[in-house]
Amino acid sequence: MTHASTQLPARPTKARRYLLVSRLQSDPDRARRGKVTFWHCLQAEWIKIRTMRSTLYVILGTLAFCIALAALNASSAGSEFADLSPADQASFDPLATSLRGYLLAQIALGLLGGLVITSEYGARTIVPTLIAVPHRARVLVSKAVVLVGVALPVGIAVSLAGFLVGQASLSGAGAPHLALSEGVALRGIVGGGLYLALAGLFGLALGTVIRSTTATVTTLFGVMLIVQAFAPALPAGLGDWVSKYWPPIAGGQIITSYQDPTLLSPWAGVGVMAGCVAALLTAAFVVFRKRDA
Amino acid sequence: MIEVCGLSKRYGEVLVVDDLTFAVRPGEVTGFLGPNGAGKSTTMRMILGLDAASSGTATVAGRPYAVQPAPLKVVGALLDPGAVLPSRTAYHHLSALAAGNGIPRRRVEEVLAEVGLEKVSRRRAGTFSLGMRQRLGIAAALLGDPPILVFDEPLNGLDPEGIVWIRSLMRRMAAQGRAVLMSSHLMSEMELTADHLIVIGRGKLIADMTMKDFIEAHSEREVFVRTPQAEALRSMITAAVQVRTEGGDALVVTGLEAAEIGALASLGGVELHELAPRQVSLEKAFMDLTRDAVEYQSEKETSR
Image (cartoon, rainbow over all chains, first blue to last red; front, side, top):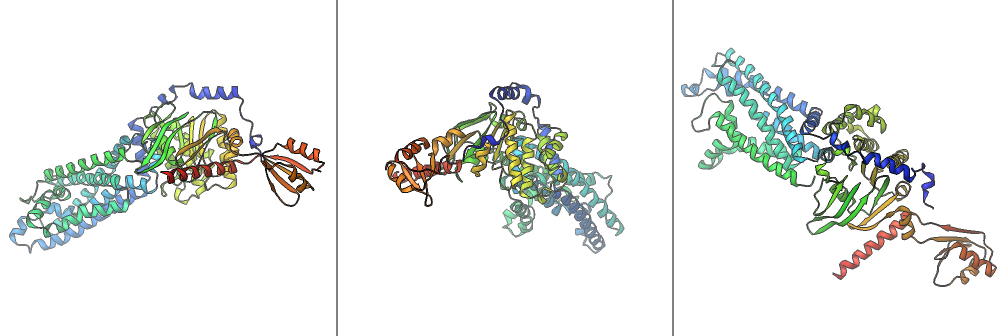
């Protein structure tokens, strides 16, 4: 068969084509006028995290779990308080009793942080994302910012909810409890929220490096719960070191009102966690910029 | 305009893209052809800054993709039609891409209408057929009204109506003065759509020429002859010319012009019922060419 150009709509003549081409090309301001900034990328990532189903599930699930655990934990601790030995009564921690939900909340928000990027690898939307914004540092920073924008308020909200429910329950049982106006309460709630936001960033860094949602969740469980559970079984020296400095354990001190002298203070603990997250994010950053998408 | 210069990509020992140099000019549809694994997708990914080149450069509108001030307003690309979060709606998928380039929401509605997805724009993309996802990917490419378009296998998964739609879209884009680069395995479609061809095999450039030149240069013209005296005519044609029989009374002659065969027949008193030159299609030209390339490659490898 012959070349079928005759079947097609008439192509523009050379002169007309030249005019059209020059119209598109002779406008050097075309691209500059719409110079894309960090702000645009931030808006894009905000739309994405907002329209990701898991975001809502993580928020609702975390809230429900933190409230339920605070209620259960506080009611059982409250009813047992009277029977505790004087030593145990002295180290009774009403704040931690109501905020213990952070143990699972950190996994949930870590998962949300991971999903912010692993969902893109899973659905391969990382390709259109990087075609729209080839500036990779900008993409990752935007993801981190919108993640904190979600995880910090959510973290503070679930801590506050857990605190209120837990303290009400303790007070009902006649056990020691805290008022919201007390400094230590505020530190536990805001600091707890901050810790959960750091857990989210931890998940984002892991997800960026690992790229798989499943592997990210598994790693989060291992790092945040398994190590903590097995720390007592480790050889004495190592076990003590892990209990004191392992970032999620150290960071978890933020929700305690009783200071265990062998462990870091609350803010020092959060500092260790923040340092660990910063180091991981830096690594994620380097990997994300260098690796082929 | 896309300019690729000495572009190579190496994965460990394997050279996937080997020193490619070509340009995709405005006002034309440039077809990008090559067998599976020839390096077409990798080349497109390097042009778009998704994969780093091992050596060489690729620029769009005069600068590397990674430093474009407003990427979607310069290049629209469709690489992977499946790339949508299943739980996100088509509208939100495009809105996020548009927001990243400061493109107004109004434009999202426009491109959705242009690709015929306006009625399903609020449906989750996971419920879309492959053809609908393909259209969504094209909508994303059109968002920034870019002067350069890059499409990797845009016809995959489309029904005949969709294929015709893509063909007219590509032609329209080129007619508006845009540079269009499009890869496809459907040679017959490429023949209808492309003005210019870039053919690669095993990462190397095999051909870079207009469609017309390509077919002429890489295929031999045949002449179809129908005659009741096929044997007589056959005996008159020299051994240097290739003749094959097609049925009892038909011959296909390669290497002689129709006029020469007509003259021969007239001289020998052979009666002709049909005498028709046939142009070999792009598909055949492509297969001949890439088969040669593959053979050449294997030869080189064994002699190493």
